[in-house]
Amino acid sequence: MPKQLPEDSVGIVQPQSFRWDAPITLQCGKSLPRYDLVYETYGQLNAARSNAVLVCHALSGNHHAAGYHSADDSKPGWWDTSIGPGKAIDTDRFFVVSLNNLGGCHGSTGPSTQNPETGKPYGPDFPIVTVKDWVISQKALMDFLGIKQWAAVVGGSLGGMQAMQWSIDFPDCVRNAVVIAAAPKLSAQNIAFNEIARKAILLDPDFHGGHFYEKNTYPKTGLILARMLGHITYLSDAAMREKFGRELRDGSISFDFDVEFQVESYLNYQGEVFSKNFDANTYLLMTRALDYFDPAADFNDDLAEALRQAKANFMIMSFTTDWRFSPERSEEIVTALLAAKKSVSYADIDCPQGHDSFLLDVPRYISMFRAYMNAIEVEEN
Image (tube, rainbow, N blue to C red; front, side, top):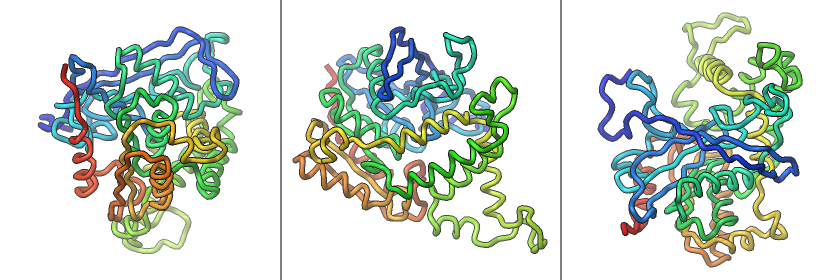
């Protein structure tokens, strides 16, 4: 519990809410009569409104990317390592906007919010959303804030995919796209991981076809299993070996099926915490959005042609031990950008932590991230 907030923290922050009071037609063909997006901002928007940075979250992220909601918070926002005074996304220079995506479960309109037509939670009736839908809803927030162009759109993993989609769909609105630990589309293996995670939720007897809210329960076991599976893919073998090895929790083998190894205890704990804080229907939506992401599909499956629409400069970063979105997937993006004759910088960072590296204070990664962001020119007047 921080008694005194760190000097490089954005401090105490309060979530805000934006309402779009008109229908939005989604890529699936269905529509919502209106929607709310919860967001936070850090730093100050300059007079020229030229220093705004959009932070897009990954699968289980939300709007709370940096700072604390109170001095009693045990942890800061999920990307506090990179957002704050003097950090990679320097809030002394930039005005940072971080939001909870449409379909989320942390205040934005999603399955757990009330369907105005029924007075009950949307549940499984909430329509499938895609990365393109998110970008359109984010553009509405951008207009509401009076921002004409993002100095940068930044994200890791699924967040990086949104940055890519922004550069294609609204090329005049993005000066820089920072795409970290992402891919141009999911591999069959990644889709398979997502399907197993969804099945764990769908087959939980407490799922009730997605209407578990009305039963005053939730698919706890399914969410725990989904998170445990996902978490394994976010870490590298080296990171797990260094952190846990084959250490036994109680020092000796008990010859039963209770939790014995430290890694088992860790995964069970992570799953338990996640199950209490994340909505099952939202988890299904987010993994489907990952599955469906494929910006080249609208351009005859030619990624270079898709990225030819962009006007932004690009920074692509990957991590050597990331096997969820391997460096080869980032290199596909770089190759397509070069073919499209776009300005691109690329760094493959050697570190043992795996896919989750983008969330961590890895010195070489943070140094490169900061150097790129510091080189972005910001017009003051």
